[in-house]
Image 1 (cartoon, rainbow, N blue to C red):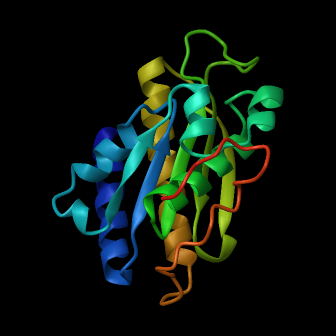
Image 2 (image 1 turned 60 degrees about the horizontal axis):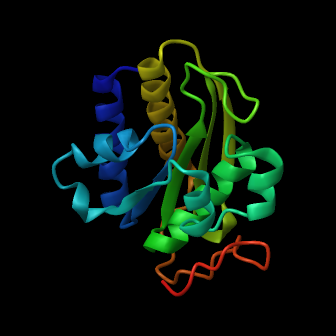
Length: 188
């Protein structure tokens, strides 16, 4: 997906958010802010975009987003459940209706036993709606990161298109992933 295509997707996504009166947030690892950059490149993004957290370091996934420390120790940061918990955590932390997260290996070296191009994107929304997608992307480090950002935006857009209108809640529940095996997130 090219930057022009991701910019168009971000603009369409933000228009849909504004139309529905919902907000969104982003948690990024391998994309390092690319998803947030695409969203904030659209004029008026602040009407729907709450913010983003780039948790490149594994301990920040735990400490900031509430990803289960046991999960991180057993599977590493490049994992579908890690992506799901990142999305859920940033949704809770930033008080958004919808959130999307990215984690993976951009290369050139493997990480956590995963090869470059191994990517997970996840979305979290109201009423426990979520989806995690596993991707096997090819190309350079830049191409993998750009494609991952585009896939994250597209996944979020598909969920917003499919969500019933008027059911988004502004009451932000406790982080469903926060528990005894997580780091303490403190009060939002």
